[in-house]
Each structure stands twice: as C-alpha cells, then as structure tokens.
Amino acid sequence: MLNATSNLASLAMFAFSGHIVWALGIAMGFGQWFGAQVGSRLVITKGATLIRPMVIIMCLAISVKLLLDN
Image 1 (cartoon, one colour):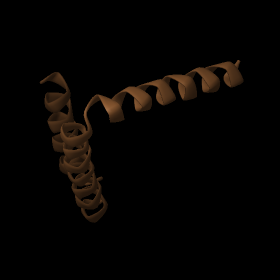
Image 2: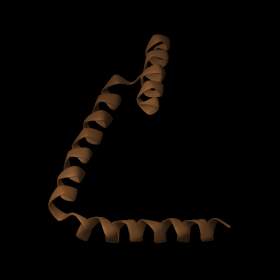
Image 3: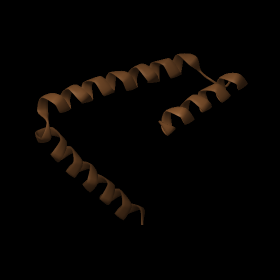
C-alpha cells in the first residue's frame, strides 16, 4: 500500500512538472503487466519445481556479486 501511494505521489509530481515520457512509461507499464501475468501463470502451473531452483540461483548470483564487489 505504501509503495503504491509513493508511486502515485511521484507520478503526480512528475506529471505536474512535465517530466514524463508518456510513450516510454506506457510501454514499461505494459511490459510489467505482461511479465506479471506470465510469471504468475508459471508459478501456478509449475509450483515449487520452478521457484525453488530460481531462488537458489538468485541467491548464488547475489552472493557472487557481493563477493566480487568487495
């Protein structure tokens, strides 16, 4: 709820100041919606067999990035 509120406040502020590229924003919003639809359907159909390996891979990738940054 707080994230949605801050996003709406940011949208209002940037729209008021005229600093929005509407075509790019609409394309990004559509891409986010499409990705959420595909991701949720994959989770519903594949379940834990898809999620568990992805969580492990992402944790390993973040760990490697943190190690390389130091």
